[in-house]
Length: 129
Image (cartoon, rainbow, N blue to C red; front, side):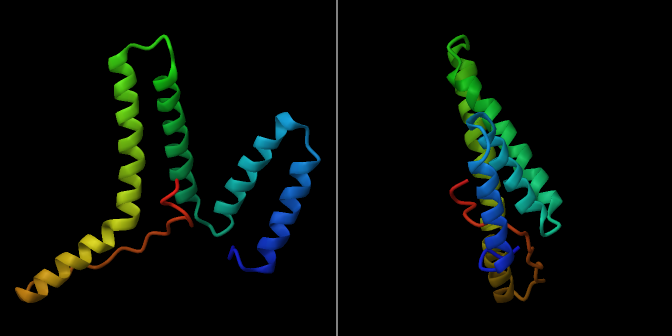
């Protein structure tokens, strides 16, 4: 679904109507459901599953970091794990083609074989994720 389309505007309007007419305790669930529907709209179920998995894992690790009952080494491991997972996802989605382009450029100079680029769909604003 293109964010400049009429379909998207209707989707947002319907989502907001549901959101505003729900009790406060249900509003976050409406936003979560809308987010999943938005990702699934373009048949990108694999990416939706990846984002959900990374989100759940990040929240779980982050809650371990903020637990007062956890030891310092466990807190440090949770923090490092959360950072590595999110930075790793960002690096793979945003910088794989940059690395492949660089390798291809250098191999052209040496008359080498070209590596095909990948075309992964990354959500808008993945850097803020």
